[in-house]
Length: 166
Image (tube, rainbow, N blue to C red; front, side, top):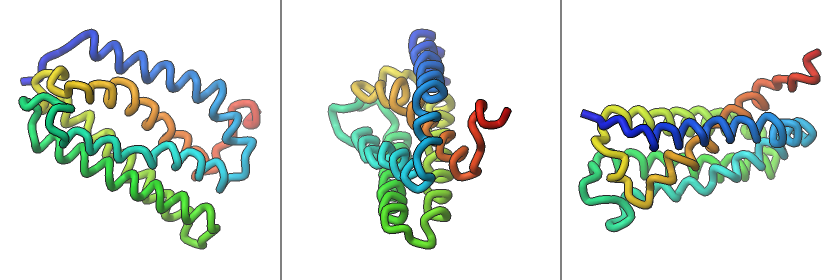
């Protein structure tokens, strides 16, 4: 049974609120000012660092009490997302005809992978402390990643900013 850890929940909620605010005020206007391929490439570059999730498989980075099944799914899912982000960056840089479909694949995979990791954490993780040094991944990095996935979806859908819609 999962343990409700209020400080951890508040930390994650704070990271989502701050990430969303910064994205709305600073990042989204900057992305809308760039050519679409350049904006998508820049946001994908942020996800290329998701290989960091493989550290959940490193002895000493997480508690030995952390489920190896949980750690494996988080680690390998992030590695696939990082590879797809790098592939997206290449496709966008070289203006391949498949660039936008590749970004869609990356963005759907990456979003579902993060949401699945949160779901597994809520339903399978008895104590967030088992993540050891990895606690910063779901508490800080994942909210940043999910907000950037939303921005990528908005760019893929060619959504206008609030100011442009009026």
